[in-house]
Length: 329
Image 1 (cartoon, one colour):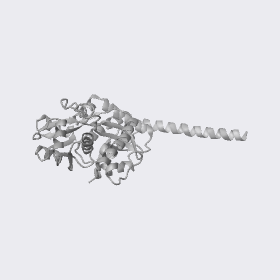
Image 2 (cartoon, helix red, strand yellow):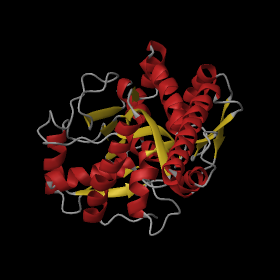
Image 3 (tube, helix red, strand yellow):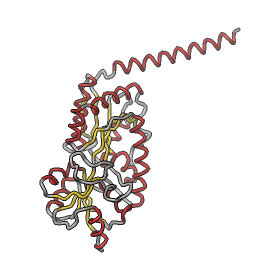
């Protein structure tokens, strides 16, 4: 009887602890947040990543009933701000505006970084994809991707293409294009997409790989020739520009994503509260239109789906980086 009574007491104690834990999580979800939330943007103000983050922060403030404050923490291609979130308390009050360049490319191009993308973060949800595009200046004789490939193969020194920097998403896309087609392309890294675009418009380089948002106005004004977008579908802002796959390059898709993450071990109810609020923003007509104006296609989804993409891209981009021998500068 003593053994049975002892076992019953153990069972009762464990059941009580489980119930209290479940109640505490439910309570945490129902009252969260009770104070302002910091959203760390690991880049300088003004870019597409920062602008999209500020819009999401503003909308989350309304949805959650607490101020979501954007803090820019630039440096080391996003590594500094990302580490700040990775090492923060997992309480839901410090979040990261995650960018694919930092989270799935940097681990392969930097010799050492201070965070583990998979182990140190809890994905909340993807905000959306920024469509990438290959554009040429108006002096370039080619009008299509296939023209460009043919011209590059006839040039012993190769065709130069500019991007926002070594190891950036456009750089990875350019290297993937080389690997899939044998195009003779030479990468020219710039310190930001703006400088690359200035040189392209000035005729100093023939090609630039960039986000649609950075080239759209110059395409519509007739100052640049769009060759193709690297998304699955055509960009809604440039419906006449074909995709690379439509141009005959099989399985060529690479966009640049942005999303929300929290430190690892953030309570599941908090993650789901944030995911719900984020999805409401992304599913709204206003949210879709505002992000589309920034060149981002809003993507509603679960934390699990975002986590799967992060892991997939880590592997995929790692192979491209290794084959191209890309190193951070």
